[in-house]
Amino acid sequence: MENIDSKPTLLLVDDTPDNITLLCSLLGGQYRNKVATNGQKALKIAFAEPHPDLILLDIMMPEMDGYEVCRQLKANPATKDIPVIFLTAKNQEDDETKGFELGAVDYITKPISPPILLARVHTQLTLKDARSFLERQNEILEKQVDQRTQQLASLQDVIIIAMASLAETRDNETGFHIRRTQNYVREMAAHLQEHPRFSAYLDKKTVELLKKSAPLHDIGKVGVPDRILLKPGKLTEEEFEIMKKHTIYGHNTILEAENNLGSPESFLSIAREIAYSHHEKWDGSGYPQGLKGDEIPISARLMAIADVYDALMSKRVYKEAMSHEQAKEIIVNGKGTHFDPDVVDAFIAIQDKFSLIAVEFADEVQ
Image 1 (tube, helix red, strand yellow):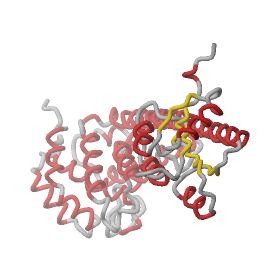
Image 2 (cartoon, rainbow, N blue to C red):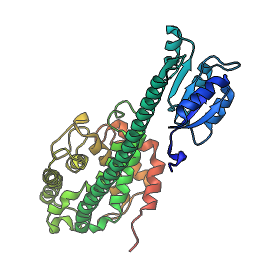
Image 3 (tube, rainbow, N blue to C red):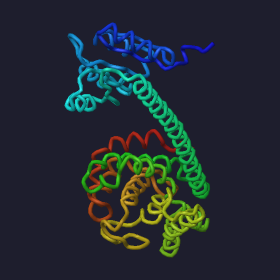
Image 4 (cartoon, rainbow, N blue to C red):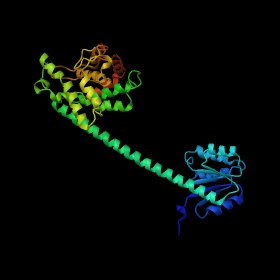
């Protein structure tokens, strides 16, 4: 015996008992029927779960006509997608047009033709099933895309962390330098998101990618000889020239990684910019290319302040750590010469966050 619960449910709405009887006799064999003899009752049944699969709706009813019932059904998120077929004696073109404008899927005039009624009900239910199937497939695809996106993001994180760890093992004196600088960069980028000079570049995705990429700013130090990289004192002029090449080594290392990934403009492109250009200066006196002003990538301009601030605040074998106020004064003095003036203003505006990051990721006392 067929389970009636597996049948589609129709809501039949008409204030005339004879019409309800006729509809039930025509549709009862194939569908499960619910009945309402006025608009209020129809809405109550439609809003309750489980919702009907389709509604056959008379127009001319006392107190609340079918048009108003349809309007309220379409205004409710729970019922807006239930197909409504008007079933009425109103046969003027304007009446039919109004019905479709309110969201009905079909308009059948009385007297009813049983074959036409059955065919149109079946058609609309088939279309509803097809829409539901496509929606389910879209949900499945969206979940699969989300999962794949998360997997790719995780893979990117692993690659960046692995590369940054390589650099850190060569220069372990800097302790939590990587963690501090990446947070400095993120805070400045977030602050500048609404700035007219930076808003087009600093969308949410780029801000997070800047934070992820910042740890690779000194990846090129893997190519610097230990006698220079690990020298406890001040570098000679010749040694410093060799040290400066870490920007080129970093650029080339990341570019090679991108080429191996099959994309010269991959998620590592920001890291490549930072590694190559974070020692450029606003007035053009930096290295390795001597870029000036807006020629310097935004990512590198942010990293320049983060890197200098952290270097000033950190103790080394060849120098004592400065206070926040001392480091701040040096950065402010470099406004318009060493650093982008607007990025310096951002640093000043969020300097309290810099202080908190410096404390949170302070180097361990040996």
